[in-house]
Length: 520
Image 1 (tube, one colour):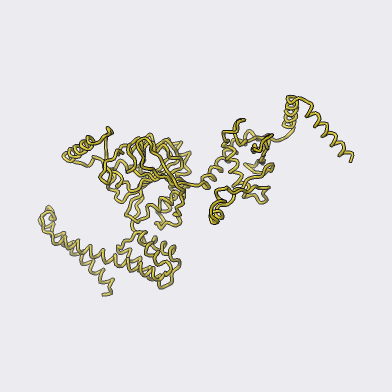
Image 2 (cartoon, rainbow, N blue to C red; image 1 turned 30 degrees about the vertical axis):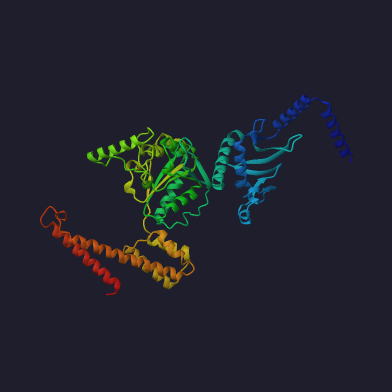
């Protein structure tokens, strides 16, 4: 009891001194006391406030990094976490029940609680502080880091770099992503509009050749982790892909899978809505880092074959038509290239080349540019070269492995009898039957509740396409046989007859293969 009475007396004396002594003297005494504590303690302390300066206006990026790092690396992985604060944004609570259930609450360290961490054999302790301002309901939040004083100078830079990298990875994987598109707008006001990007396609759901899928995943991962490589080699941190193949081969689904794998925003650039090269540059500048820029159906958006393949007469006629178009235009822009729909645009091949590989393409980092086309031969070689389209990916008809993968995904496991039908379908594919993944998926989709019907209809469709391909070959061969024009003859007198002999041999082989399939 005597000890308690002495403590109460000391507290009363301190209260009286706090009311009597000047504020400047109290601040000096407090500073002396803190200095004494700092000289005696074996630890160094580092404060990370939420805002910079006394105005509390500019956010502190390091505070955000610490908050993300503690959320993933320490609070959720610790076997016995300290007191945590759970919160759910108002926008989530006001939405539907399913959406609120799918969005987990955010977790943070409660005020005035600590959590330990270890780095390179050293122990660090993070403490969350939240002080209420006098005569205000606002709080001033901060984190404090405690490190061993002897090793603080050597450990702190490496530890902060480790923390920033972990926070960066977490922010990339957890942030909401957007799908942007450029709107048709007057000159000088090119801009993007966006919606949430929620496409479900991933590399796990794609029906691709396993080797092609592995190469794409390795290339994308190497690109995303190549910051130091691109800086060391002096190359812009960007990558160009060309996806070409028939309609329905999965080009758009592959783009969505690439965006989901990289966790990038998607910018879908519609070239027919861009009026000038200046607007094209303005749109490029507005794209963010870690973005995937998509230009679909590039052969239909602009005429991109250039003038290199034209003869002298055709060149003169082409230049004459272009000068006439320039004279009829109200603008003085040069190198006008027409759109696919017959209208005259003002975006040039040169402007598009600078967009993909010029100086303006280096105004950001970690960008992937994806072009798609159904006819790769309609694109100028200058746009196809490495540096602009680094990786060329041909997506053709559905192969045997992709077909089996789609069947398993759409209708699940099949019976032994259906397995025989799948073997027959694979034989049809080897014999030349072609169906795109979209066509295979449609057959399976409309019969997804009846696996036997789905597999049977798919095999029948492939067999019908084999017969159609054989008939087409017969017609082509018969047309070659009946063509007696001098153009079909070789330079030597009997070259035409030798060609007919080769055609007859091919027809005989086709007859044998057809008879074998029919059981003759």
